[in-house]
Length: 211
Image: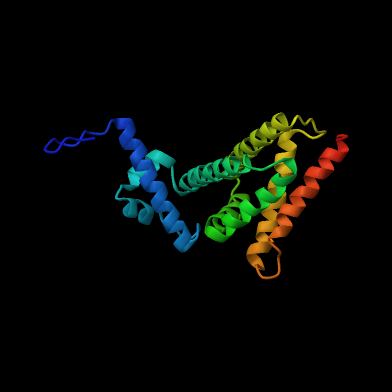
């Protein structure tokens, strides 16, 4: 906290770089939401953030890097929010419905982020040089979800036939597919169905493992 009359403390190089990074990510989110990934310009992203194109390239290497960093950051925050909420579930049987409800709330609150993710996914599949970077980002996502699943297994004393990584991949595939249908036809796709489907998956795993 600065004392009145004193000059503000100068940021360290690391603090200035982190500030620039957050400003660029915030600006990128706005621009991507307004124009979509393909039609967004790195020049507009940098201009809105009050930073140079050189700063953007220094931080992220280009538009693709900005997007991947934005998705990684926002998904990490989303997963953290879900984990905190799920800890309040009374027992394991409540977790699937809680997870489904949490994700539907996210889709309704911030549908643009998921739409951007799908647009970028399609873009990455058409770009051989980008695809490995995108796949690496997906693997990091899988690992984060798998870690949460491992925590549940320890908390409830479970040992199921499938690995946490495999379960994470199946859950993400289910959630992504359901989200596409929900966004395309929101009036006719029952939001509660996602939690029920996750429950079917959990109960199937438990039955297969003898629980």
